[in-house]
Length: 261
Length: 305
Image 1 (tube, each protein chain N blue to C red):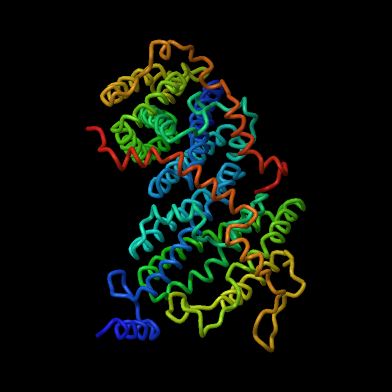
Image 2: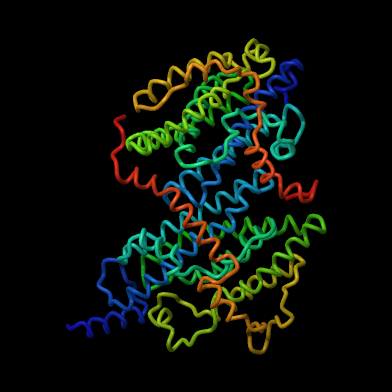
């Protein structure tokens, strides 16, 4: 445990660990899903770009797991690969498989925009190592956001592609809102400034930013049902698709427990 | 100067070590030979993505995940660069992809085989890439200058892949007995295709790619170089090369080995390898599934910002 972690009360440290785990799992799982495009993306130029983005996400996940490992005394790989599917805390948005390119663009756009709002807040965190990491991540995520924004507009410019994008967004909105599901004992983190603003505030800010952009492109925002769906299990619901992915990414490590790879 | 005189002067130029640029005049035979060579190389990079791609989701640590995704990304980038070199010789990329998927053009033998374990990931990145880099380094002297320049960049990245591969193998060899067996089992399966990879010895007097210096070294010379560098390194890690006939002859200054199965090589590269059709079908399926994206992007302007 480092100095920063020592100074925190136990309950705050545990809540901070939950927050870090949630963000790290978001990055880890979306990084895994999107790495499936490597080698088979719609164009060679995009193949290289999408690989870079998913590598950045895995890199961010690693940095976050390492930060978490400093709090808990574990090992980053053990946290990333050593849990049962039920113990992952990514938002329900990341429960879905890769699906098609429209689905990938839609999910990534929702995630990148939500993540940008979250990182802007975390860059002001009173937990100095998290504030520094969030600032670093923001620099890379800016490029992801620009790339995804370009894709969103390109696809929205064709009737057939826009319809695919709209269908994916309609399917994803409720689960995308789960990125801002409250983390356990969030009020402790807000009080201590580790999380400078409540998730509910960040959620509103995100919706204010994203909804007009999508509306302007003729793409759907969240329905009233999407907005009122209970958020309590937004980070604990798991699907068969994720259980399949978990089976894949733990396969090698599980073939020889405790070995070094 | 008539065409024959022009061609004679051209061949004297390349055979004397001269270089050719994309917009220089060149005889059709030379253009076709370079195109065929570069197209097969590009196809091989693109198809070479598939065996390793299967392990991107299964990489067992964060470090390996990053290294493997980055390696496969490099191969896609190489395919992109090489298709561009080939396109400048007069064949559009879409046509090259269509011919590849239709089984009309070839890709390297090693990418027609299955991968079965994490040991394969190490052996491919270490030894398949090593065998490739031996020939690719010689291509940095190709008479076709755009290809030679592209190979300089590619060789640099391939050398990083070899370090990653050796690190995967070394980690497994320092691990449990099951992990060591995993590597040996992978090496046993890959050794035959590796020995076939550079192709049967050719007659330097009739090998046009060699005469025109499109490639700088013959097949057997490349295989000997590969063996000289890598067999000692394989032994050093405690692995056994599955060829009782393998040994260095001090007197002749060359490696002896059991004759590779050239019938298998011919069979495999003509689309009859264990994974040839499955991999081509995978490419066709994914190409078809993303056709709407290319149509949308190439056919319509983007919505106003």
